[in-house]
Length: 114
Length: 113
Image (cartoon, rainbow over all chains, first blue to last red; front, side, top):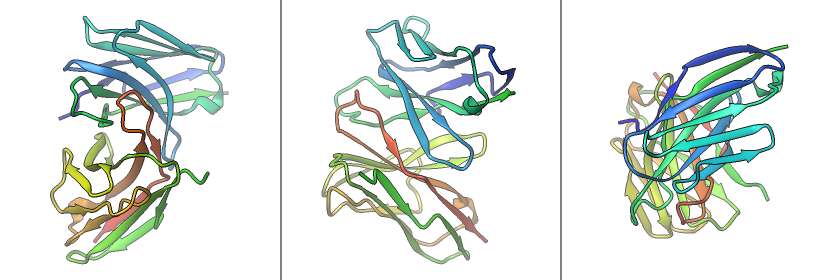
């Protein structure tokens, strides 16, 4: 079963606009990660936020985490055509035997028009 | 560093054939894993390993076998290919602790006819 559910499934915006993607999950987590996948390529790690953090920034990326609502959002500011990709959230569950296991959401397809 | 490498990039199999997807990493990561990606399904964990000689099942292990004889290599074996195994397969690795990012290979696109 999928731990993460992402919303929206697809997002189409113009260059320069902001893009917001949301992720909800079901169980307690150790951390939540966001990945990007360009068409036909492997996933690339973008940012990790731990369960005791509420907000994190990396360049044009801003991630928030609300553990009470079991949800996270990824904001990409001033988007560029090169940001066109699929974006996935992935959760690492709490618990000592979970190791590096991640559970992925279904992804949001972002299209940025020049 | 080459990172995570996978071979082959593309493969077509007939139903019932067997094959091995190769995965190697040169980052000395303890944790390695295999995922399959199907349209609308995200990535699903097939098998994972926390070190040489230690493997375990993920969410969708049926029809697949793994072994980990070295830290660097983690091959995935399809025992008797079925059309339902048509998918894109990704290998990933990371340090063992939960708070580390995973590095993904470029994927193997497998078609079973």
